Amino acid sequence: MMSSVLVGGLMGWLGGRGIGQLPAHVLWLGLAGLSLALAWREFGGLRFPIPQWPRQTKKTWYHRFGAVGAAWWWGIDLGSGLITRVTFSGYWLLVLAILFQGTPVYGGLVLGLYGLGRALAVGIPPVLLGEMHIVNMLNLLLDQRPRLHRWHGYGLVGLALGLALRGMIGHLSY
Amino acid sequence: MLNRFWQFTASVGLIALGIGLGFLMVNPWLIFLPWALWLGWLQVGSL
Image 1 (tube, helix red, strand yellow):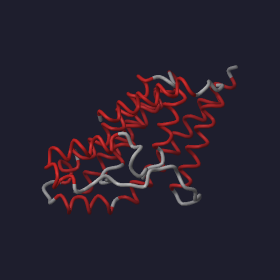
Image 2: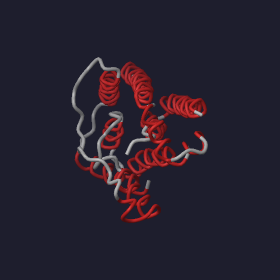
Image 3: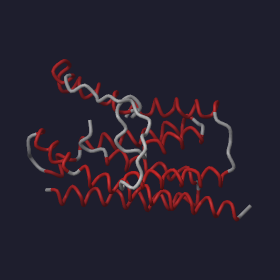
């Protein structure tokens, strides 16, 4: 989560210096369109690559640093979302929102919450799934990935509708 | 076991959706806050 906050803050800072302002309705409708395209991709209707660094975090860190040390390194490595595979494309909507909003506080908050969600995804499943070996639990969760991706798609559709509505209301009120 | 997992996932998603839609009319940037938390949670099991 700490790396998420730091990288989000840096993105916000960079966005504030590098990206100009767009008219609000163009911005919201553009992000809505992108969200819808990503949802369509998630449901298999569209095929296009998304930017990502093709690497996974190092599983061997567990043997090198022990459980606590590896947890720190995995958190730092995965937290930013930038230097590992992007398995859920909605991540790029967060990045674009941070860049266009353009403040470090907002960037840190958005990616910090993303990091918190990822941390909860490590801490809560053992409570929900009961006592089981970590390998069995990971395999069980991996089997759920198609359904998690569908939920991601529904979320993208919801986000697209919300942003499009806001964009249209904003445009009509000018 | 999986029922509890999916009930939790659905609850988090619906709460995030509700908060997001509530935020939308106040300040649209805020919609990305619950979305970020939800997206992080969906990556459960990913390394």
